[in-house]
Length: 161
Image (tube, rainbow, N blue to C red; front, side):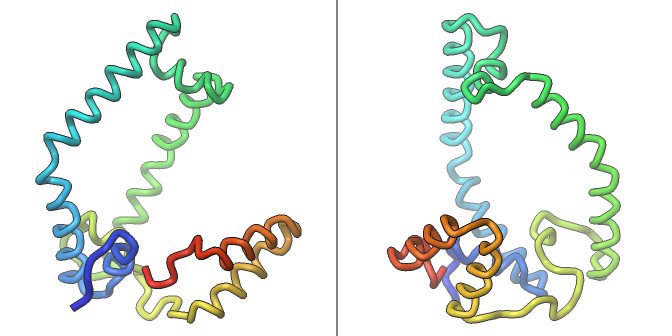
């Protein structure tokens, strides 16, 4: 038996066995469910704080205030949302086809990450993965490689999760 952690969660969701995916999903989300009132209260407090701050700073909305910190116009955000909505039919079609490829009667949230192709990819060891990542970042310049070397050397990456 393997312990379910945030670092291992995706691995469980990529399992070819739906029962494994379901158990991992329900275990993790069961914990969130137990704290749903606390999480809802925290979210509510955050929203109220954002609204208060926006009004105090004389912004027309909390959205405008939030985007202004990064000098982003509201229209940019609205275009992003519109683009997502326009892409939803293609997204829904993808999941319908994925459901068929996986031979599932119903598609559940825990079925979203499993590959519809059996034996897709595969596992590589950590040292090989380091080489692949370093090679992939090479076109971005020496600074990226130096920072990556530092990340490896200083243990920024949890190898075992």
